Image 1 (cartoon, rainbow, N blue to C red):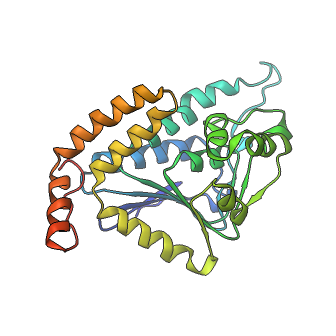
Image 2: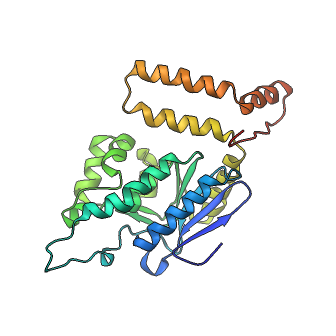
Length: 265
């Protein structure tokens, strides 16, 4: 683990990536974006990394964009916020979805704005029961970004997505679980252990198969049923030829736990 606005802790088969501006509630500035992109690229390049956990230092996951990092230039007119999205947030969301391993969002406190939508782009979200999710854009006259207008209605439906976006009211972790917005809300005292157990479990999983699963789920939103059936056929052909499938069948027949080779197997 190194110092800086984003920390990486290499564990046994997985990496813990921590947003590290606790004095600013881990709000995103250019340094956080750069550090997070480097950390994700390092995980993607490491064949020993079979799961990524993304969390925040201190009492927040992240308060979202650091508004003080944007210059509201009077002489030059209002800022062009699309530059921040095109330069930082959009590549970040694409990088998370592209990772060939599961990404766990471990939400230890508030996740607001773009940070909440980064959480919703991850594969599995575990939240402490004290955590909250907030889409504050309407309070600033803005529109949810970082993929929020895409992920929110797909996770919870239009009624709740529009309510979250237009009313800008915080959603407690337990409500988020009940809505299907996240996978699980756990007691604060059990949060760290639950996250670590899940990461260790996924680090022993057939990671190539999980990567194909991510690919299929992501494609399903744009595909017709016929197109998706064809895609399932194709990715299942790939999966069925993998060493991990052979190991899974052998372990099942021998009544023992499987020893998956994982990535690049």
